[in-house]
Length: 127
Image (tube, rainbow, N blue to C red; front, side, top):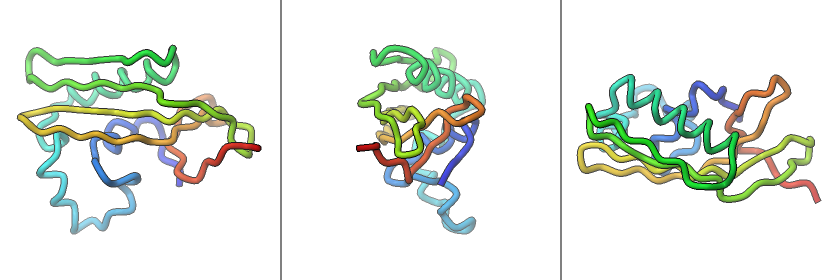
């Protein structure tokens, strides 16, 4: 399954769920107990930009913090590989915090043909 990079921000906030789109529309109550429930638009933007910075840069941990809302988080590339279709893929760990809640998840993210990062749960390393 592939999800465009602009959805990376929303998906990355969900602990225990790799693809937000797989959840049924009527069963999203788990989001009430995640940082997503408290993120403001500027928190989402900061988190999104931070994830892209981690993906596009070195494997150093990239952090963000919003003094206006108290939300914060970090992203770090855990590993990198070439997939069977030749795409560059990375395992990206994202941790976010808001209102005493924390989410922690790792995603496989690959560079698509149009040079945008996409979550790709089916990507496997080439031998």
